Amino acid sequence: MRSGRIIQHLLLLPGCRRLDFFSSSLSTTTAIRSLSFFTLATHEHAIKTLQNPSFSSRLLSFFSKQPTSLHFSPSLTPRFLSTTISTEENSSEDDVLYYETTEDVESDGWEEEEEVEPKLGDGGDGGGVVLQGLPWGDRTLSIAREVLLSFGDDIELFAFKTTPRRYVYVRLDKLSQPYGCPSIEELESYCQEYRKRLEEVGALGEIPNNLAVEVSTPGAERILKVPEDLSRFKDMPMRVCYSEGNGTETNGVFFLESVEMESENCVWKLADVKENRDPESKGRPLNRKRRDWRLTLPFKMHGMVSLYLDC
Image 1 (cartoon, helix red, strand yellow):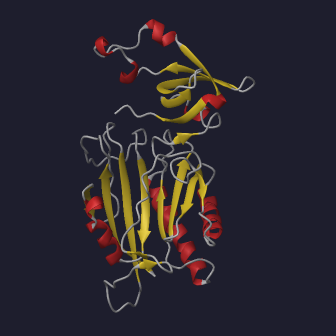
Image 2: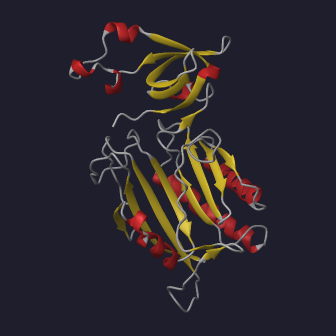
Image 3: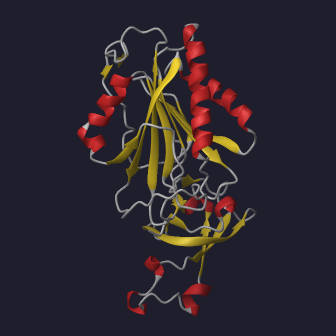
């Protein structure tokens, strides 16, 4: 097999305003919603994906070359996808019709993950591993972990999910990056190596030989585990959903003040963001009273906690 043409496309998520291209390097401090690379079997498979109305309606632009240097405006939360198509070295046809199938299911394009409310351990932005009982799931997971060993201790497996339609979703977490986003080069390198290993093992009959793979970052609004993940993101605002004493569910945007392991409490302070300011303050920062206010919350009363993007 040889790498064929690479089609790259940049998707802009709802609520974002504009995209600027510069020749400078990709800013590592920008709030990036997620970065992902996915591979499909053939040119035809990718074109069908791009022609899908719900998919192409969000398509801003795509390129026929390797990624150029990009700079994202801080107000944006984009997702970068790269579709890599492989073709047979001695194939007599460049564009052979191909469909990935299981025993009774046919797929004619990329399977977008179902948009559901994330939760801890869902194999998506809630992290964790979800194999759905597939007999080849454990082997693809072990290969994913084996490939990751060559990338050092700074990148970890955040989430892994397999589906009956033979799709594999991998999310990688870079510990030294503020939002946990590996670089485009790191994602592409991992995706290529992982795909190579899957093909090798697939040729031995240990796993299906027509798996589709997406390698991405956790979303910037990733779900955090309490208390394990909180200290890592203590300098960033977080949206905290929690139960009040009367059982009422509420939420707010806070900074972490401290984690008290002995009493199993978190202490939160209000983040100075628009949502927490008086509507009549005309953009002025929080007053002294609100800056000094603290919320002490037991671990068990926390609901979903995620990073907050003020855009």
